[in-house]
View 1 (tube, one colour):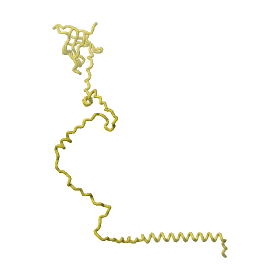
View 2 (tube, rainbow, N blue to C red):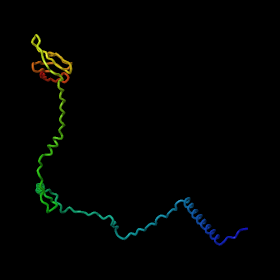
View 3 (cartoon, rainbow, N blue to C red):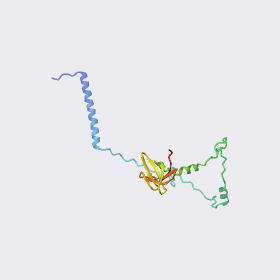
View 4 (cartoon, one colour):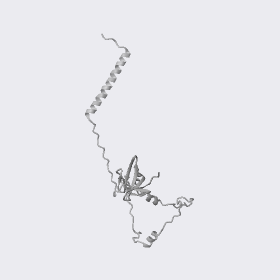
Length: 202
């Protein structure tokens, strides 16, 4: 046995049925359009061309070019006028030609040419001086005369004492060249440097 529905319940049922029917119709139309493909469009209708009597006139969108005449043109070359135009020399006054009130600009003469500084900067840097050889670490503190009248010198190097005559090598490095009463000439073989050592006082 069916239960009787109220008026409000029937209205809701009819509303749901109506919405469902709209959805079904809209969905069916979309599906049909998807499978049926695009609808062919009709070709545009031909526009009849009406020809007027007489000759056809060109379109005003592309007007004809202007035709020039060479009746008044002189093809000859006037050398006098050409030479006159080439002889014109411009001599400026040094002022701003775009201003009628500006005074001539005073340009000071340079004190020195910039080319001299540029030439000096292009020179290679000077070569460094070679290091000076060290001083000979010997002390000449006396001499003695042999039987053949030659001299022998006495040298101190640190705590070592050497006796040498001209031509001898002291401490495997210093060669005795000349022995005098007041000085001795010694050559440092490592630097090829010759120095004169004075006689040390008492």
